[in-house]
Image 1 (tube, each protein chain N blue to C red):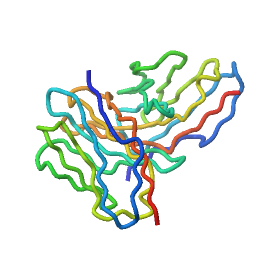
Image 2: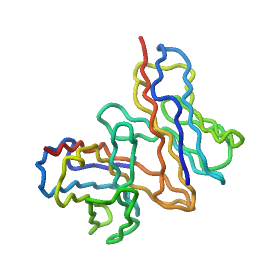
Image 3: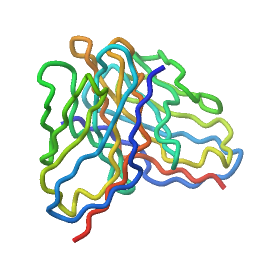
Length: 114
Length: 114
């Protein structure tokens, strides 16, 4: 079975500080990986995705993520956080051949201090 | 840009009522999905559809049904609403590009069943 782990339920950072949100997956082959962001009361917005190729992917809003096969990780990073980045972040994974089976982590809530 | 819309942002219903949640996408996507999101449980797949009039059960289909009469519209039906169906409901759509799928989400419907 696939699973996605986001070990940090809640992270607090100061505005301007760097950010790294962790995501680990368990799946034998290379999965397709996604990060979504959800602002309060809103739906999920796609930040970035990884299918294959370059293991460092760039997304919207200045976010990037790095796929590390040896660590089964797909951590999300941002060099300088803005107050508007406060939201909940979800990592998700799907096995390439399985339609619709997008498995989500439990989410990491990000608080940004001014 | 992909546009997924949901008919209501907030909905209050009484136990036993029949509830319809509507989702429309404007990108001619083949696939559509319904999730529910609950604190501590993350997102769980209820049903999905890969074509008009086709549907597949997700992880938690009990108490729900779906309808897809037109490609752009996917309805979630609660035949007899119960309080444990109080939740945030998220619709998504996707298409396959060389076997790769990305799901795009609507803004969500927050349903309260009294």
